[in-house]
Image 1 (cartoon, rainbow, N blue to C red):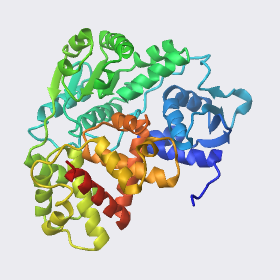
Image 2: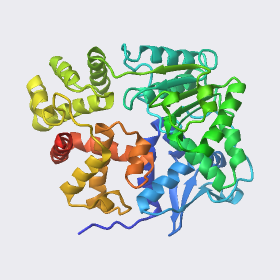
Image 3: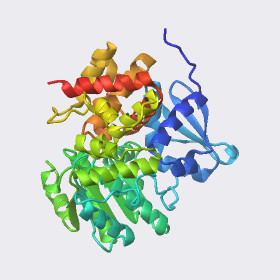
Image 4: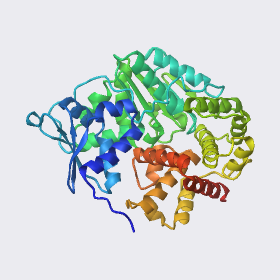
Length: 456
């Protein structure tokens, strides 16, 4: 029997804040949400209390979309979001995401981590190899001298090869070394959602003023503008305004501009004004270096260096899958108290990362395998129900989709009933932690991965 927990404003905020922590780095979360608290909850509205007017205005202008998506995913349906000032209620009326602002949001330097930033994505933690050396050099040049080196900078390559790492490294470097500049990193999904919400709430002028005022704008996965003419139109004007004002633009995509179907020709032309560079899959030496960097950064003890060489030789598709293989070997060694040897790595990876050409894995194949394993229908796995016997398999399927496919966070979310990318981040982080702590979860993920990899 499913254990029912009464939903309160406090318990809902616990769930929502957990998702925000997964989407934002600790500095940004602490700055804007560290003193926030759930204030009230009704069937159609959720009220969040914050300490002052400035925090309220900043959250209203930058994070309402994330909060709204997290509330919907946590409760199963949309609620209006109200922001109230806890200590100065007499001088402040609640702001609702359904009503236009009477005053523009005050401009202030954007936190380095807006838009799903990660503290681990810095230049210091980026492993340079022949496959990415030119892209790294271009990104560093832009970070050291925004709008003076390459503008725009367009980086393309397959998912899991380091594009997001470089974009966020640029954003964090500029925020740290040139704090007077306003910086914004967003995914294409966030840009589209901000635009759609601005249209709905009749705040389009505020949207334009905000996005055209940044000194450095970085947009990840711009291929998702494909087939979206209105979004392309708005980004075209945003691009022109920023470039004309000598502001830096950095863009990433999974393919070069000419290969993005239905992308307007005038946008393709704009992207070619600066520098277009690619990132290729890493060679063996770079893969070994990536694993060495990870074990050093995470404080993992690997007594035999040949273990890393073996893993790097077995997994060559992308960096995310490479690091996932290391995580599994380390977790199995810890859970079974067996020494971390090449033989152990062979046992762990023989089924889930077989040698030779493995069949391409799709999200649909993963969803089918998980549904069969848990006795669920595809509609239940991707639907709105949030009972534990459905949420857990759904999170496992999202984790495997993130690790075993080239799909981006927005694409994975779309395949699971149109969920927000922050939901995918939350799910993958939770399952990754459980793999390290629970032998049953580890075995389940191993079993499902082998089943998916061996399917024809």
